[in-house]
Amino acid sequence: MATDKSSLIAPDRPATDSRADPLYHDSTQTPRARLLQALFVGVVVIMVIITIILSIYRGAEVPNKLGLYLMLGFSLIGFAVVEIIMIHFIRSGEVPKGKTWFLYLVGLCIVLEAVFTDVLLFQ
Image: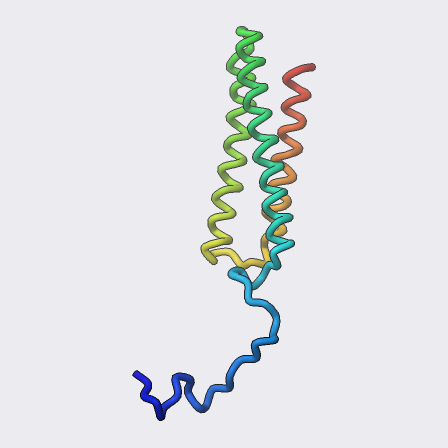
């Protein structure tokens, strides 16, 4: 404990400047970059949900190809699970933050697969 005569800050450590750059929880991203990342993840999630709903609908509409259409939706869920696991690894620090470009690449592949699946469902 510090008394009235002693300082809480050690004398060999300089005091920090209060006018320095703002301190974010994740120091590698600004709030704007974090917002853009959240928007990208939101777009991927919406595309996956729409594709799954359409594959279930089309499978119910064409019963002789039910398995095919459901498997298209389930394969998309598999890629989304891989994306979620990769996000967990990056957030936990097991993968360096500099490798986040790979998350965007996988997310782009998921969006492309969702679009191609939608086209294939209604050809």
